[in-house]
Length: 414
Image (tube, rainbow, N blue to C red; front, side):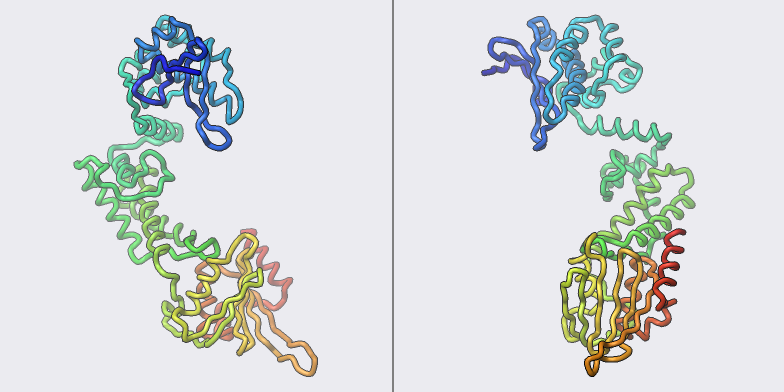
């Protein structure tokens, strides 16, 4: 049975407990295999308790030094109790100069001290005791996040100016570059906000009329990476030209914002009707869609959706790493196309002779390479609008398998 002897307002700062008559420091750190927080304890003395109660700075320093030992215990290991106990006297009872010297030799959690108000400049110079004069019991996790973000940038040699920082704050990318961007004008210094808005306006103008289409090959909500890269390049080029001197981080942040917004618009819109976009109407009256697992879906012209929208919806629902071959067949006309997503290729199949008198039907199979998702969309809509004959202009088409494989290897080697 244990009783809490001393605790601070912040629930994460280690508590002192008495367990079976013995004083112990108790702290939560890390997680077990089920992602539940782990709790560690180790014995302390009355003299240590007195310092912990009276000196917040020493209490935080001890916590910072013990946390790496907790990390070393992992998800199932035990705390190195001897190593933890060995930290008590040097941190709690030694002179400030000796504590500073100790922290130059041992691992410690810098972010934890920064979150509790430690002076960053003094910490960087190794003056940990002086740095903790400004310590607070309450924690500011964002302060530690900003410190780590700036340190990562410094390691990459990136230096941000005031406008760069304002842009990153506007897009929500200041703390971490992989955060999904959004527009947060309230996070920007009002004096810099008009300048940020001008940069964003340049980006919007650069990608006006561009779109990021869906890529059903990678799932229902996936978008076309080529479209994304094309838009990012257009935005970054325009922003760098119009606003010379911006850091790469700021430029990429603006392009990430433009691309993310365009991708969201695409994801939230119905699957595109490629026949309508091409200015035509499907000549096919009935089609059959199948995947590599033998699943089939029928489409008829008088249904509520276009053939291409229905087909790409089918692909988005069914496509997977082990299901990358999809077929569109017009049984009445005896023709179809087979899409090979794993190889960026397509085959068109036409019936040369129907089965008769016990003989098998004869088919002509021709292959062509496909240039990404945009290429697939064009070929599928062309087939729906005009059948295999309409695909002639989208070749070259190769009936010789060996010739096609050589062409595919040449393309993949580029």
